[in-house]
Image (cartoon, rainbow, N blue to C red; front, side, top):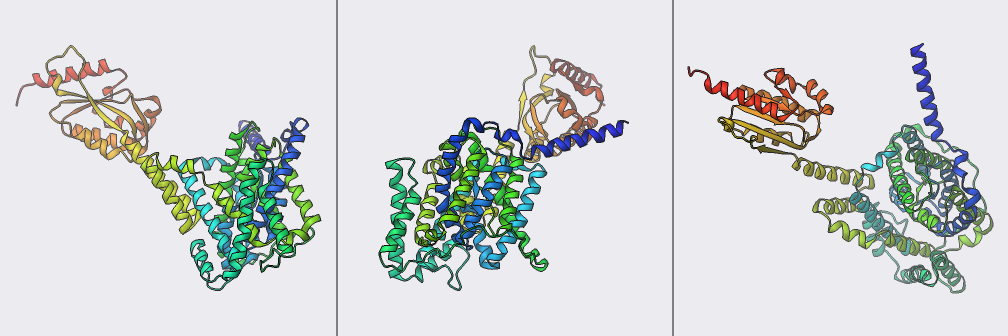
Length: 561
């Protein structure tokens, strides 16, 4: 009966956990109050997202159509199944940085398979409750990662400006490819392309000064497209777009190619999870938009990428820029993100022809300005002026992101920050010798009271051991443990070895103030067992000092052999 009750209770807990990851009526509880603001915010975000979706689709090596499909399909699915009420999802610059080498090495078709596999991985991570793992990434690493992404996005637009996106022998590294594109560029074409990008950039910079609601990127693209229609020019266009969404279908899964695609899928999944969780966490701090559930967010993003793959799209992530626009425009429920996807769908159904005439140089201008805006000068200055360790983690993460790989950069940044944090934490571990309480008695100089402060873990254990072992000319050592904070197995083992080493030198060890949370570990590892007598464990210092003084008196009164 008891066993059956335990199983039933566990099943109920699992069921409640699974239900928490699924959509519910509570997600739309505030819609009767917020729907007007949600629709306006959705329209605004849709207008902002259109050039970004087109640009990221082209820049990834896929197509403008793939970018739009991702923004529509993934935008709806992530809004419905995700863990944030205001998160807007779709193609992002960070994902483009990862996808470009995959397209170069495996072809655009491989991205769809990678998207499907990555979606399954992200979905599984959410179901397993791994959503809070992003909290281990330090702020300087996140900002270094963002800076590196911004630099890569900017550099990736240089081949778009030179129309040298498919030249043979081009490097997959954004910096090298940018230099190669400039060297191979047609000066005449480059003048036209740079002029188009500058017009877009000027519109994006000036429009907010006229009115905050004016979508500068869309205005810039419209202006450049109209000029390109009336002025003869050599600029490359997006090209024909379908007048609707493609029919859903499973991507071709070649078992022989899966082995080569799995590492890429794991990288895409990791990036999708990190970027979505960071975006959702930032959005939750911008306004009172309800609780953010990181596990459900991963489930939603996984479903979104799977859905995107079925329609031939790219991996989806939460987009902090579009999410911020949503919140600032009044979006307070999931209806806003859903309506943003509807707006994009209407564009596909009703305006695919005009969209296809947009010059690629105009999209490059949008993404270049977007990349510059990703970097906040005040944030960079604050990190560089904070501590040398944080500044180093920031710079190293940014450099590795640009030079090698995004996920490698995050891993190295976290490891570096962790090493620095452990080093700082180990320095806070200290051993202080205290005077024996007054009134002073004869023989007190033979008693050493040592107070252990701070954490005692593997990074500090050897230093603490050496400091205590350096104590000489005493008969009794009283170890005060009441101020000891974190203790791991290595630190506890070191304490046991230290007690044995002191006792082997003829020094009696008394331990005072073992905290209840440490007692089990001390008994398991053998710290308490290393004491000469089990009575050498005390709860208060006066009793321990009294025993130490008695021990010294007995030692001094013992006959000399």
